Image (cartoon, rainbow, N blue to C red; front, side, top):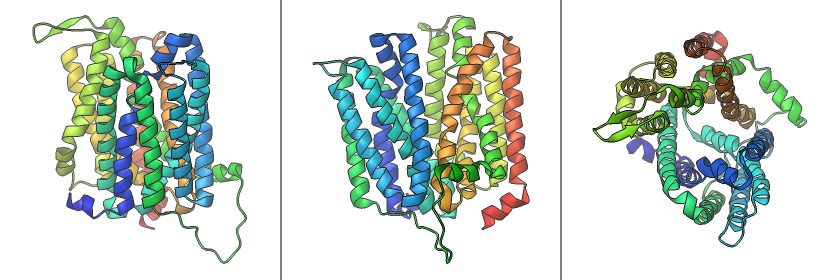
Amino acid sequence: MSQFSQLHRSIKIRLYLQFATTMTTMAIMPFIAIYFSQLVGAKITGILVMLVISSGIIGGFLGGYVSDQIGRKKLLVLSEIAMGLSFLAIACFNSPWTIMPYVSFVLFMVNMFFNGLYLPVSTAMIYDLVRKKERNFVFTAQYWVSNLAMAIGSITGAFLFEDFHFYLFLAVAAVTLASGLVTLLFINETFVKVNSKESVKPVSILSNYQSVFKDRLFMTFMIASMLVLSLESHLTNYIAVNLEKNMAETTWFGSLSINGINMTGILQAENTLIVVFAVSLVTWLIKRTSDYSRLICGMTIYVISYALLSFTVTPSLLVGFMILISLGELVLVPVRQGLLAELTPESQRSSYLAIDSFMEQGMMIIGGAAVTIGGIVPGYMMSLGFLVLGMAGVLLMASIMKQPQKQERISS
């Protein structure tokens, strides 16, 4: 708690707001596709979901660029108010009195656009404020808060969404609007334009992102991160399908029947519980190790364990490998976030973070592609592929951490 009390006030406020908004949002978002597929069918829902995701990508590109021109606070307030109002409208069109799914999808596109706008800007604000010595603590705290909020929100939605989605939409709207109001009243602008004696013309959005893509060190970091962290997407895609098809139904504790679908949910819950309850112990155990050792060891454990998880259908082994995955995740994520902060220049921080936020969409694409490929090639080949691609990411990360230009950027 002493470390937390020494953080900048705005960081502490953002952590509280992150918990509240993530918890309420996760009470609805995991169930949206199922809800709308019941209203308009799975095929149409799939198309509309892709449009919603595309809207978020466009918002992220725009948010990253504009934030580096006018600052963080204005965009945060604008995006949170817009998201809150769109959730309020969604509640109205999915109420006990009227249900209009296609209007709701348009509103979700608006919502996702501003969510895409919000994400890189919110992260950039934290990066603007956090001091180098605080990074591991802050990024570990963010990760813990996010997982705890997702766990509470998901459990709440699992029991309440089907019968009370109207009230959950209202709750998300209220919390999001309140978050925007708190940001407006209690958080100061964190972005400061770099002063220069020469007048600098504003760059176009294309030129802005062109310079990001030309940053070879950063893009290598992104590719390495994608190769490793995309393994998580296979849990609810290829691995879930594999368990559903190949895992024999088993009985736990004498009477609890477990099949492949149940096992996927158990593994997700196990991961969340370990992250929430083991974070302090893991942080204490690795506090004397270097960032390089943490990241490479954490990634290696993560990759090998996911490759083995995708290969076996034995419940006890699945639970054991998920323990290793969760521990590896706890070790690598805060260090990776710290390195990301090092590699993002202040003048273009939101633009760089916008590219990082697209990694989640990339992971979704990889996860979907693996399901298709898994229907063609044998299971052992899929596991071997996960291992090879993941270890390629580990080796890439190890190589860039040893590059002189990376050391120079970190020390500057």
